[in-house]
Length: 328
Image (cartoon, rainbow, N blue to C red; front, side, top):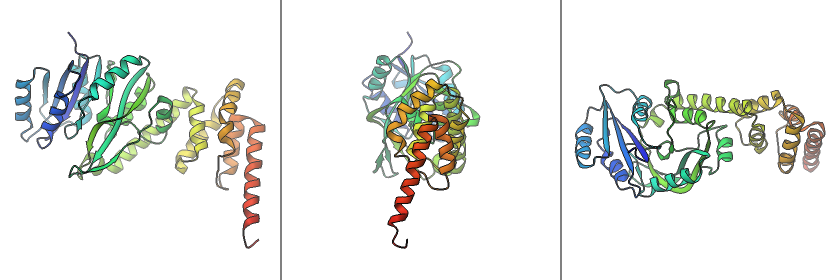
């Protein structure tokens, strides 16, 4: 019979921490899983460690590549051979708490409209000292908004429903997870559990450190694609909420504003946005260089009256500030 979960762990020269990662999965309270470990052309003692564990536990399946191809292709090999209802991730230098799989399986079975669930992550330094715990958004709408400017899903902590042909791409490396999530999120809802279920080691020579600039460039393209998908799907409320919060980088704010200003909205959509934005509209602040552009965006999204009210409020605020200056 097919297992409930397929846990996929890619590894390349990971002999240092591999045993701890494997043990953390074998110790799970949810036992109905297969454990697919993809040895991506390792040249150290990784193969020997995997042979010992595969002989000890029949749930472990070891797949090998002759050369190192990278984490994306290695994960695709694991996904293609997976038989479980759900796919869970695990990295070779991290570890999961014993109740992780049980909590995530329960969530996905209780929420059939959700496609993926992650968790909070404890980030560790190289000496295993805790550096911080993430505060990722929990619900789908908050994740949609957060994706506008960055990734808020811990790659190693996720569990998602297995769907054929949903694979990692070469174009997504070295931010292959964020690129995949921005495509996946159109298939179903995402969530993060409030519990910290995963421990992540941050090494000085990790990919996120060595290829930081390339990772940022790919992440920026993925965020750009996500913003355009929101506009295509008519989720102007998410774009407007992010715009009104005023916490976007200038280039991202300009891009979101352009998408909103180019949107073709019906009167019903404008009415819904006005009702939604009423509480945040007057609190929205912008610098004097962006007042005209912001006014054009709000006028297009919320109508002439709402846009003019906001503009008058901004002008009054500037006038009040100038009156309080000691040199006027």
